[in-house]
Image (cartoon, rainbow, N blue to C red; front, side, top):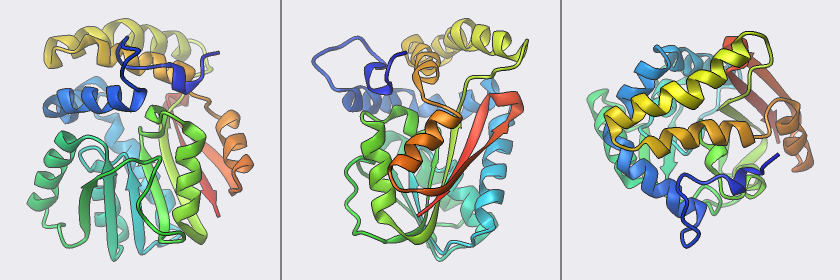
Length: 245
Protein backbone atom coordinates (compact mmCIF):
# COMPACT_ATOMS: atom_id res chain seq x y z
CA UNK A 1 0.00 0.00 0.00
CA UNK A 2 1.20 3.52 -0.77
CA UNK A 3 2.28 5.69 2.09
CA UNK A 4 0.46 9.01 2.62
CA UNK A 5 3.62 10.90 1.61
CA UNK A 6 3.62 9.30 -1.86
CA UNK A 7 0.14 10.51 -2.80
CA UNK A 8 0.19 14.07 -4.11
CA UNK A 9 -2.51 16.30 -5.65
CA UNK A 10 -0.56 16.95 -8.84
CA UNK A 11 2.09 15.05 -10.77
CA UNK A 12 4.94 17.47 -10.20
CA UNK A 13 8.20 16.08 -8.84
CA UNK A 14 9.66 19.58 -8.51
CA UNK A 15 7.12 20.66 -5.88
CA UNK A 16 6.75 18.98 -2.47
CA UNK A 17 3.45 17.47 -1.38
CA UNK A 18 3.10 20.36 1.08
CA UNK A 19 3.49 22.87 -1.73
CA UNK A 20 1.03 21.03 -3.94
CA UNK A 21 -1.57 20.80 -1.15
CA UNK A 22 -1.20 24.53 -0.50
CA UNK A 23 -1.70 25.32 -4.18
CA UNK A 24 -4.69 22.98 -4.43
CA UNK A 25 -6.57 24.46 -1.49
CA UNK A 26 -5.76 28.03 -2.50
CA UNK A 27 -7.29 27.23 -5.89
CA UNK A 28 -10.49 25.49 -4.72
CA UNK A 29 -11.07 27.70 -1.63
CA UNK A 30 -13.98 29.71 -3.14
CA UNK A 31 -15.90 26.50 -3.84
CA UNK A 32 -14.77 24.37 -0.90
CA UNK A 33 -17.65 24.84 1.56
CA UNK A 34 -20.38 24.67 -1.05
CA UNK A 35 -18.93 21.54 -2.63
CA UNK A 36 -18.50 19.86 0.75
CA UNK A 37 -22.17 20.39 1.63
CA UNK A 38 -23.29 19.19 -1.80
CA UNK A 39 -20.98 16.23 -2.22
CA UNK A 40 -21.58 14.89 1.31
CA UNK A 41 -25.31 15.69 1.26
CA UNK A 42 -24.68 17.81 4.34
CA UNK A 43 -23.53 14.85 6.42
CA UNK A 44 -20.12 16.46 6.99
CA UNK A 45 -21.87 18.97 9.28
CA UNK A 46 -23.13 16.13 11.47
CA UNK A 47 -19.69 14.52 11.52
CA UNK A 48 -18.18 17.70 12.93
CA UNK A 49 -20.93 18.01 15.53
CA UNK A 50 -20.25 14.46 16.72
CA UNK A 51 -16.53 15.15 16.90
CA UNK A 52 -17.04 18.23 19.06
CA UNK A 53 -19.62 16.42 21.20
CA UNK A 54 -16.99 13.83 22.09
CA UNK A 55 -14.39 16.54 22.72
CA UNK A 56 -16.79 18.53 24.92
CA UNK A 57 -16.57 15.86 27.62
CA UNK A 58 -13.03 17.09 28.34
CA UNK A 59 -14.01 20.80 28.47
CA UNK A 60 -10.78 22.15 26.92
CA UNK A 61 -10.22 25.87 27.38
CA UNK A 62 -7.43 26.30 24.83
CA UNK A 63 -7.74 24.53 21.47
CA UNK A 64 -5.48 24.35 18.44
CA UNK A 65 -7.36 23.44 15.26
CA UNK A 66 -4.85 22.01 12.79
CA UNK A 67 -5.58 22.30 9.05
CA UNK A 68 -8.54 24.47 10.01
CA UNK A 69 -9.42 25.34 6.40
CA UNK A 70 -12.44 27.64 6.45
CA UNK A 71 -12.87 27.10 10.18
CA UNK A 72 -15.93 24.83 10.39
CA UNK A 73 -14.56 22.62 13.17
CA UNK A 74 -13.23 25.62 15.10
CA UNK A 75 -16.60 27.38 14.84
CA UNK A 76 -18.40 24.25 16.04
CA UNK A 77 -16.05 24.01 19.02
CA UNK A 78 -16.48 27.68 19.88
CA UNK A 79 -20.28 27.51 19.86
CA UNK A 80 -20.62 24.19 21.70
CA UNK A 81 -17.70 24.07 24.13
CA UNK A 82 -17.23 27.82 24.75
CA UNK A 83 -13.47 27.68 25.36
CA UNK A 84 -11.39 30.71 26.18
CA UNK A 85 -9.33 30.54 22.99
CA UNK A 86 -9.16 28.63 19.71
CA UNK A 87 -6.26 29.02 17.30
CA UNK A 88 -7.00 27.89 13.75
CA UNK A 89 -3.97 27.09 11.62
CA UNK A 90 -3.71 26.24 7.92
CA UNK A 91 -1.19 26.41 5.07
CA UNK A 92 -3.75 27.92 2.68
CA UNK A 93 -4.16 31.68 3.06
CA UNK A 94 -7.19 31.66 0.75
CA UNK A 95 -9.02 29.13 2.91
CA UNK A 96 -8.28 31.19 6.02
CA UNK A 97 -9.65 34.38 4.44
CA UNK A 98 -13.01 32.68 3.94
CA UNK A 99 -12.86 31.28 7.45
CA UNK A 100 -12.22 34.71 8.93
CA UNK A 101 -15.30 36.07 7.17
CA UNK A 102 -17.44 33.26 8.60
CA UNK A 103 -16.03 33.83 12.10
CA UNK A 104 -16.71 37.57 11.92
CA UNK A 105 -20.32 36.98 10.80
CA UNK A 106 -20.87 34.81 13.86
CA UNK A 107 -19.16 37.29 16.18
CA UNK A 108 -16.56 34.75 17.28
CA UNK A 109 -13.41 36.71 16.45
CA UNK A 110 -12.64 37.23 20.15
CA UNK A 111 -12.49 33.45 20.63
CA UNK A 112 -11.10 32.20 17.31
CA UNK A 113 -7.95 33.54 15.68
CA UNK A 114 -6.71 32.26 12.33
CA UNK A 115 -3.15 32.12 11.06
CA UNK A 116 -1.07 30.67 8.25
CA UNK A 117 1.22 27.94 9.48
CA UNK A 118 2.76 24.55 8.87
CA UNK A 119 1.15 21.78 10.92
CA UNK A 120 4.37 19.77 10.82
CA UNK A 121 6.47 22.65 12.20
CA UNK A 122 4.31 24.41 14.78
CA UNK A 123 5.52 27.72 16.19
CA UNK A 124 3.93 27.07 19.59
CA UNK A 125 5.79 26.14 22.76
CA UNK A 126 5.57 22.71 24.35
CA UNK A 127 2.41 21.98 26.36
CA UNK A 128 0.47 25.02 25.11
CA UNK A 129 -3.03 23.59 24.50
CA UNK A 130 -5.68 21.57 26.30
CA UNK A 131 -6.82 20.03 23.01
CA UNK A 132 -5.69 19.73 19.41
CA UNK A 133 -8.25 19.04 16.70
CA UNK A 134 -8.12 18.32 12.98
CA UNK A 135 -10.94 17.84 10.51
CA UNK A 136 -9.99 16.10 7.25
CA UNK A 137 -6.46 17.46 7.48
CA UNK A 138 -3.94 14.89 8.73
CA UNK A 139 -4.43 12.89 5.53
CA UNK A 140 -2.72 15.76 3.71
CA UNK A 141 0.41 15.85 5.86
CA UNK A 142 3.65 15.39 3.99
CA UNK A 143 5.00 13.43 6.94
CA UNK A 144 2.13 11.99 8.99
CA UNK A 145 4.13 10.96 12.04
CA UNK A 146 5.94 14.29 12.19
CA UNK A 147 2.64 16.17 12.17
CA UNK A 148 1.15 13.95 14.86
CA UNK A 149 4.31 14.27 16.95
CA UNK A 150 3.94 18.05 16.78
CA UNK A 151 0.36 17.71 18.04
CA UNK A 152 1.69 15.66 20.95
CA UNK A 153 4.42 18.20 21.70
CA UNK A 154 2.12 21.23 21.99
CA UNK A 155 -0.51 19.33 23.99
CA UNK A 156 -0.58 19.72 27.76
CA UNK A 157 -0.22 16.57 29.90
CA UNK A 158 -3.69 15.03 30.14
CA UNK A 159 -4.78 16.94 27.03
CA UNK A 160 -6.70 15.31 24.21
CA UNK A 161 -6.60 15.17 20.43
CA UNK A 162 -9.74 14.78 18.34
CA UNK A 163 -9.16 13.93 14.69
CA UNK A 164 -11.94 13.57 12.11
CA UNK A 165 -10.81 11.82 8.96
CA UNK A 166 -12.12 9.81 6.05
CA UNK A 167 -11.74 6.04 6.25
CA UNK A 168 -12.39 3.13 3.93
CA UNK A 169 -15.76 1.44 4.55
CA UNK A 170 -15.51 -2.30 5.12
CA UNK A 171 -19.17 -3.27 4.78
CA UNK A 172 -20.84 -4.45 1.56
CA UNK A 173 -22.31 -2.61 -0.35
CA UNK A 174 -21.19 0.64 1.33
CA UNK A 175 -17.58 -0.10 0.42
CA UNK A 176 -18.37 -0.54 -3.28
CA UNK A 177 -20.69 2.48 -3.44
CA UNK A 178 -18.18 4.66 -1.61
CA UNK A 179 -15.34 3.69 -3.94
CA UNK A 180 -17.41 4.29 -7.07
CA UNK A 181 -18.69 7.66 -5.86
CA UNK A 182 -15.31 8.93 -4.69
CA UNK A 183 -13.41 7.64 -7.69
CA UNK A 184 -15.74 8.62 -10.53
CA UNK A 185 -18.67 10.83 -9.52
CA UNK A 186 -16.99 13.24 -7.10
CA UNK A 187 -14.08 14.25 -9.41
CA UNK A 188 -16.51 14.94 -12.24
CA UNK A 189 -18.69 17.21 -10.12
CA UNK A 190 -15.62 18.83 -8.59
CA UNK A 191 -14.24 19.64 -12.03
CA UNK A 192 -17.50 21.22 -13.18
CA UNK A 193 -17.64 23.52 -10.16
CA UNK A 194 -14.04 24.18 -9.17
CA UNK A 195 -12.33 23.58 -12.56
CA UNK A 196 -9.89 21.28 -10.76
CA UNK A 197 -10.75 17.62 -11.34
CA UNK A 198 -7.35 16.50 -10.07
CA UNK A 199 -8.06 17.91 -6.59
CA UNK A 200 -11.00 15.54 -6.18
CA UNK A 201 -9.18 12.58 -7.71
CA UNK A 202 -6.52 13.20 -5.08
CA UNK A 203 -9.22 12.99 -2.39
CA UNK A 204 -9.98 9.38 -3.36
CA UNK A 205 -6.30 8.43 -3.66
CA UNK A 206 -5.35 9.99 -0.33
CA UNK A 207 -8.19 8.19 1.46
CA UNK A 208 -7.04 4.89 -0.04
CA UNK A 209 -3.48 5.48 1.16
CA UNK A 210 -4.39 6.70 4.64
CA UNK A 211 -3.69 4.26 7.52
CA UNK A 212 -7.17 4.19 9.06
CA UNK A 213 -8.89 2.39 11.97
CA UNK A 214 -6.44 0.33 14.08
CA UNK A 215 -3.50 1.30 11.90
CA UNK A 216 -3.95 4.93 12.88
CA UNK A 217 -4.39 4.29 16.62
CA UNK A 218 -1.25 2.12 16.48
CA UNK A 219 0.67 5.14 15.14
CA UNK A 220 -0.74 7.29 17.94
CA UNK A 221 0.34 4.72 20.53
CA UNK A 222 3.82 4.60 19.00
CA UNK A 223 4.15 8.37 19.39
CA UNK A 224 3.26 8.26 23.07
CA UNK A 225 -0.46 8.92 23.11
CA UNK A 226 -2.58 6.86 25.50
CA UNK A 227 -6.20 5.69 25.51
CA UNK A 228 -6.22 5.86 21.71
CA UNK A 229 -9.57 4.88 20.22
CA UNK A 230 -11.77 5.46 17.21
CA UNK A 231 -15.46 5.77 16.49
CA UNK A 232 -16.82 4.98 13.03
CA UNK A 233 -19.37 7.26 11.39
CA UNK A 234 -21.78 6.61 8.51
CA UNK A 235 -20.89 2.92 8.13
CA UNK A 236 -17.17 3.62 8.09
CA UNK A 237 -16.98 6.55 5.68
CA UNK A 238 -15.37 8.56 8.48
CA UNK A 239 -13.72 7.95 11.82
CA UNK A 240 -13.24 10.12 14.87
CA UNK A 241 -9.94 9.38 16.60
CA UNK A 242 -9.45 10.35 20.22
CA UNK A 243 -6.27 10.05 22.30
CA UNK A 244 -4.70 11.62 25.37
CA UNK A 245 -1.23 12.72 26.34
